[in-house]
Image (cartoon, rainbow, N blue to C red; front, side):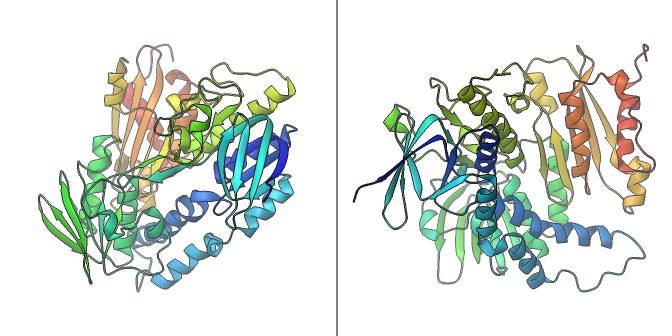
Length: 474
């Protein structure tokens, strides 16, 4: 059978949220663009990650807030079937028709199937039914294939058919018990959700929990999970896994754990396998290093955007990269000026020091920029300011006995904030202010004039500035 051959300006492999944004910006810039997808249009975030996981976690947060307020009557706890139905509605029951309709409305072509590079500026797409389409790009190819879960090389683990984040977020019922292998964001979020939904949960972590955030925040999340009834084994090594007729058994150096299901949440790696990278001289096992315009090193036509480049494995950061990449691909194709200076229109400068992240546990952790230890390792002369969030007037309004903490990290040589971490109920909404101040390099003496409304939790900014001390020039 002869393959169909098409020529377009830009080929995007991967129709997740990041790929959609690359394609949309390129089309708006005047390029004929085709996006290739072998699964659901909308990708991991829409169906198996951000959206369904937060749909499972939001009822937990609301119930916790209501239970902390006298005068609010809460009876019966969570309605588990209703929570799962709402999750299904948010994922559109894993039907991507609305996303396909959006592609059509945006003028983005769609080719379904598995796309692989087959030469310079060439992508061969194999459909599920076996037919092939060869797409030749006049200007560029963008690889936007996301990341995939890491399954450790533990005897018996793969044979035990464990859950990954996909199976956890799309589960049709709540298992009686769930063991979670790992201590990162996915591990603690799913421990929070499934414990609240009624499962007995055990977390087995090789180190501690949330090792990439400030230790004080990780300690509070760990204590809260303990209080919620989650069993946590830290600094534990799993040596063998076996699925029996009834349970999954995990042999660790701290004893044997039995659970109805096992979730492996030990990290993710860029999804570069089976992309045909070897056809253009790249090693699929190596990271796709890019410059800040997301152009792959050594190429003038190949871009890698989002998780696949390993810069910052977060959906919002991938979409940020996508806007820069789509715009710069169009600019280069049309011969327009390229603004690739730091913080320019065509670069992802924020990847290097202004990446916000929220861990949607109870309490939440919201952070941006380096931790104190990371900043010191970078050679920066810093000052750390800590404050108890429970002492802020707005916190006492939000809930009784509010427990939380905040940290601001100041670059002493420049007089600007470079990092911030918050841990407490619903602190997610605080991190954007910190992100804006960091990106804008707002001097601390100017931040004094950004007055927080009273009584809100945002008054934390006044307290942190007071803790630092008002500069004499202010």
